[in-house]
Length: 393
Ligand SMILES: Cc1ncc(COP(=O)(O)O)c(C=O)c1O
Image 1: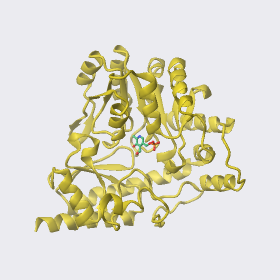
Image 2: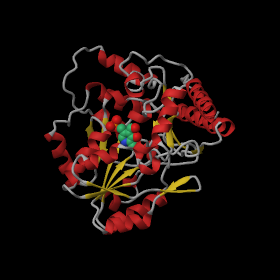
Image 3: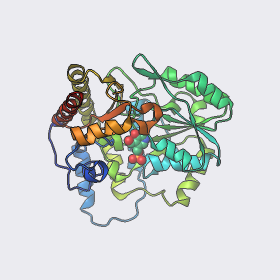
Image 4: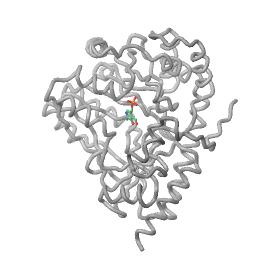
């Protein structure tokens, strides 16, 4: 057994890192600790690194096709980890989930169509709807006793009124909910009743804390499989986002054909040379690493919750059931996004994600990326607490 040391701090500055090398540009402060974008500060599992190094040695980085090993790894992972049996033909790859969401909107809806999202939600959901000339239909989540719930009555109304598609975020970013089978079934019944297609973004599917279980939406019933496109990837799970290897699973042949046409039109149907290896090796060998990662991240979550309650009691954290992102209600500090940004970037020297980008009810919230060595999280919390105290004086 390999024991991974997630406490190790690895210098990422100067590596063309989206997270670590943009602080001056984005926050006018080159020294902020970045705990914003959902990218982890941990290396991928040993077997993945070795497989990529081995592949790099060949030196010829040509166009790449899928192998039987790739399909077997994806199918095996979904079966073992999520109890979902998928067929090889259902799997189509894409360079990323956001490009897939955008192509799915184009392929499976018409200009002007209403597309439902459940705010506050991962902000590119708004963009893939609006920038493709469709209309956002906001089925805002309800925060009840520190936990988000779906508004089924409103969903039924919106579906009845003609919305064409639901962009489901499962598990939910930034709310941290791992939707239960019952909740998904209830949403699914509404979609079936009113012919609403479901695009399920399940990129966080493997990142689920103890006591919770992810249910792939399409695995619930053949009827739901027939109206669902599932978007998934090993990129969040194993920190592989820069390799641009994501996939969609589409059991319905008609939907699959339409989406495939979109993919080939943009010539995005080929796999990346290293992405292929990353998918196959992580889904084949990654479980041991993932179990250790989840334990470590949950330790970070506990640290955050304890720290905040002891030192920044103005903050009410929403405890996530999955993802490595914590959503903090900071409205008692300020409901003004500009003020919270100033407090983070200028006064504290930390960069969490400012909440209003996820939807208007996110104003006054901050999202913290927990996937970093504990010492970084500790330091970021200390910096933020100090700035909050200084602001009060
Ligand atoms: C819900 C969700 N979907 C998609 C993505 C990004 O996917 P990709 O990098 O494959 O476009 C993220 C990244 O944080 C996410 O949280």
